[in-house]
Amino acid sequence: MVRSVINILDLSVEEIQDLIQTACDIIDHPRDYDQLCRGKKLATLFYEPSTRTRLSFEAAMYELGGNVLGFSSGQNSSASKGESVADTARTVSCYADIIAMRHPKEGAPYVASLHSTVPVINAGDGGHNHPTQTLADLLTIYREKGSFNNLTVGFCGDLKFGRTVHSLIAALSRQAGLRVVLISPVELKLPSYVKKDILKAQNIPYEQTTDLQAALPELDILYMTRVQRERFFNEEDYLRLKDSYILTPGKLKNARPDLCIMHPLPRVNEISVAIDSDPRACYFKQVLNGKYMRMALILKLLREAGTL
Image (cartoon, rainbow, N blue to C red; front, side, top):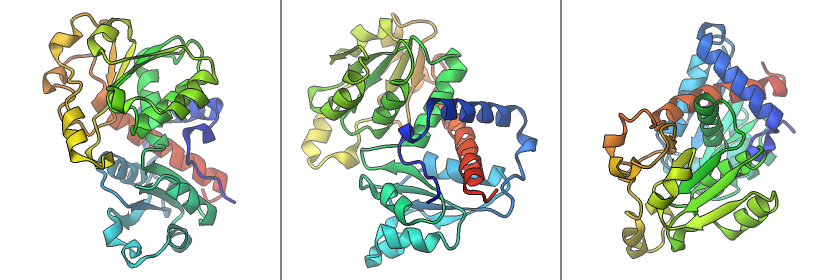
């Protein structure tokens, strides 16, 4: 079976460091990489809406000299006729060299990887995992802080359904000196299994609070998230919680001058646009870093599959 990446923990710390070094080399020497995937095809199988992830995968493949095929909605595929994920993966394996899949159901990309004959990259599955966003986050932290060690990281907003939060906590849990601050409404707290399986299992100190402003002065990194309307079954609950945290310039007065403000995007109103010009705002850097890390991951998996 060819290797796929479904969970960020599928990659070792050393492999992630190698991917970061490759991404940095791509940034410095783009022309050395612009034909490496010539003749190769990436299939983007996106069963739910996406802007950044889908387009960055496409941009990554094009900038490596490859081509892209796929769909941007389950309604535009044979899934609308009842075709299973397993059959879709087997079929698309006949056309493409590598697959990026986003699906609203947790575990769907894993199922695809069991039936695909080419590497599968999880591009987000429900509220579960989003490993390539985590790679973008890690490159951003590395480029801003120079290290992953001894960081205090605050996660704010929807920590219950936020797959980017779950994946980044898992990735950072393997670094030395991590401390975590969990900032959310009670209804959107980090799931107990994430606390048990990662934070408690690794003896990582953490605290839970509902007060963003009180937590800000101690943070090296603030990872903001939106309250995700699509994850709610009850519209009233969404409307009650959607404006729980709104980051404004005034709230940053007591924050560290080297604070790194991150957000996986899309943003609704949880970060004021007035912060976009603040040098501590790193969320659009994350977007660009995501393209470079996806380039590095595509190269790694195609080489391991022996097709590059």
